[in-house]
Length: 243
Image (tube, rainbow, N blue to C red; front, side, top):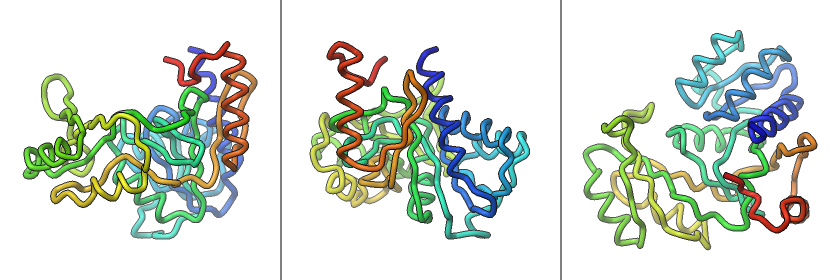
């Protein structure tokens, strides 16, 4: 419950970045759901592009004005969550399965802001990397990922493969600690049949972090490390990821 409050703090703060007339991309996931709810209360005169069907459905239900990327291929701002983010603003994303569309929105935006609770801050990325693959290439891509030293696992829901909004599968692939995220992202994407993966190298311009006291905007490695140290001190040396 505490982390849900941190997400709410971060979501509320991130909505302050949305100005009238903006074209804003919205990612996917639980934090983005809170952002959408906060936006529906603020009611900015902005237009929104959703990265997933779930975000689109919620935004439409709550009265946000939606447009497509075809209508506006250039965005002013993207607000999105992250599963992990390091001091250089490299991020791991894709637990919700919308990683390909989220990455497209990030590339289309002038400014990218990741909105997270403090448990998502890490010194180095090391979670499993979601890899979106064409169903036709599943076995081939799995073998290539294993040859790279990864341990791929097909994401399933109730015993059946999880299907992305693009109609593809996800291989959640554990590589251990990712020391060079940009090179790892590029190497994975060179595998034939891979559409995209969840490593977002230096994708964010800044981060909004929710914590016990509210939310703080972080725009540099120095600020990130100072914040991380403060959280570790409060946690008596525990890793700030939480559980």
